Image 1 (cartoon, helix red, strand yellow):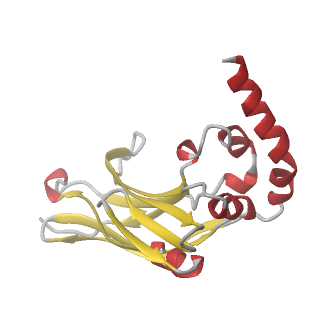
Image 2 (cartoon, one colour):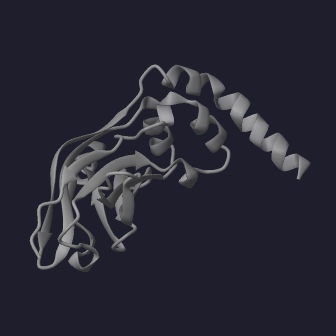
Length: 190
């Protein structure tokens, strides 16, 4: 137990200079465009994102640390006198990996159980930029007399990082990669 704590402290002390310089190059996750819609009695969201990894995240990826990027979507009922009510939450979970021996990037869709390989980082990031008709739920959740909106955000999942990296990730801006919520009114007819 004490040896484990010493190892963690040793990793943090050795990596601290890299973390402090990496905070100068903060990446960014952004949502540029999108819409919420109903198709065949299913509520879906489509959006165009951009993912720019910070220098610290990029170094970690290139040194074998897998990064999990999550696109979270929520169906929200608007209420006049109370806070809005989140009816359902869904997500698309993607794992970004770099395999040095093969010199390839691997994109694993943890939600669907599929994977793709890429020769460079840029095409992989382009692939994760499209959220295509992400299923949120059924129209059975909706009633005629209510108004609804769908919100979406993309973020790097710090909890999926290896344990020695997490303390630094919590306090460093270089690891706080999130787009923030973007909202769209859901237009539908029963």
